[in-house]
Length: 151
Image (cartoon, rainbow, N blue to C red; front, side, top):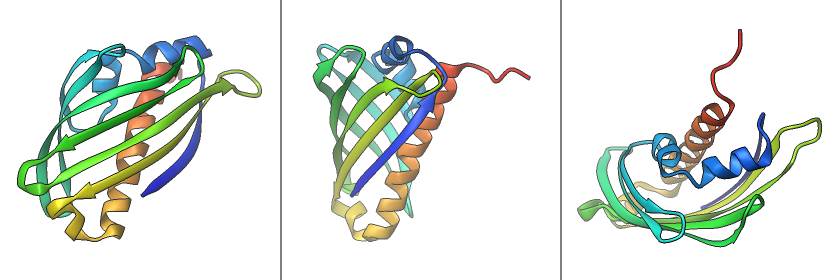
């Protein structure tokens, strides 16, 4: 399963970069994340509970960052085991660039694989779930970085 998208965030590139490396921000933005410990340098351990169709599972996994270029991007990869539900693993290449008219373009290419009971649900259900998870993460991330809308 693959996804590609770009979001424009109303903040400068270093602000976005700092947020992408902040464990508290990441924990708050990952849907279903109850625990995230570690650091960008050493990697993170995460606990995420999600329901995929009829299957609810708590995944425990590791997340690592590689190809880190400060202010420009990195590759994030992770693998989680959900007991009888199966496993999920995947990664994303995240790139930052200056947006036209100000702000920062955050571009991501996501690749994900699942196995076990979850994989038996069918690729359409799993793909739509993965797309929703990525969309929720980046929506929450954008809202966090931009702060409350002024009204």
